[in-house]
Image (cartoon, rainbow, N blue to C red; front, top):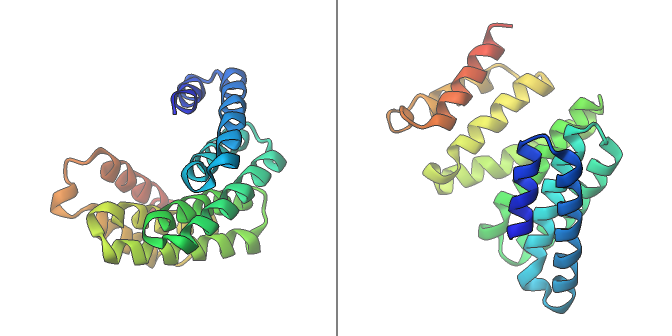
Length: 186
């Protein structure tokens, strides 16, 4: 876990080459561990792949990002089949990332497909456990309007979520509200 966190730190500081090297080292270690004990270490392999894909995407290395996201998604789907309540949030996260990547590459059909699956997963998760997942659901609604030109009713629904009393002092909710207002003003 320490290598993955170090890579995130490097990435946050725009030290992308260092982040890439550390992610690759972490991925190699986690793959080796997963060979011996897949049920324990495959979630870590998928997390590292997803983070590595985020780095690739930020650097416009879209082919590498797509490959890493797809591998992470395959692992997460397998894990979710065995334990959906634990791993469906991870599946939704990777689908969300893929939707944005596809949108950035003007692959609208692929973006829409990934978005719709992520939207369904986040909606279901938010209904089951609102406090844990409704901000994620709000975020995917905003992504749908901002990136994929979905119906602006999604912004209204997202705004209803983020302006709830219990989110008044939650930083992420306030950031989502700013994003909504930005999209509404266009």
